Image (cartoon, rainbow, N blue to C red; front, side, top):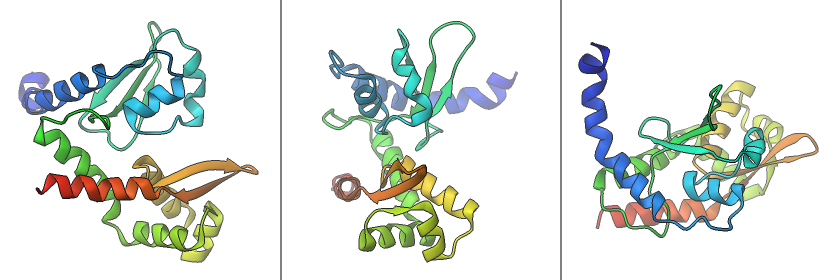
Length: 190
């Protein structure tokens, strides 16, 4: 009853987009590539530190989802390979035939920019260069939880590059990603 009453319609609505994402991802050549390169190709995210051990697994299953972007979710079942859920997408260099997929990916990216605090963070880092989370908190007068939430979303959408330095997270601007988003919007409205 739950499938019929609540889930089936949503599944049918998203199925063409998921098929498009899977077809595009299957068209890529992963031969000879390291796990961190593969995860970047598939998810458009750098390999998060907590997932580094997955590179030792014999098999990892990637599962596109219409609902999780821009985040990654790792599920380790008791039996079988680990699964990484990620926002359904078409990787760069492949052809997007589904307007819904292009629109969904673009909406995820643009919604990350549709917040004054996140724009202030981007502006601060663009003007000052790489900054630690505590420097961002102090300069923009943010609470730790607010900063964490905003930095998480900006990192998840790849607008900020995150690295550890002396035990603290540091963030730098990914200008290429911002330009890529503007180009994607421009192509979308053509």
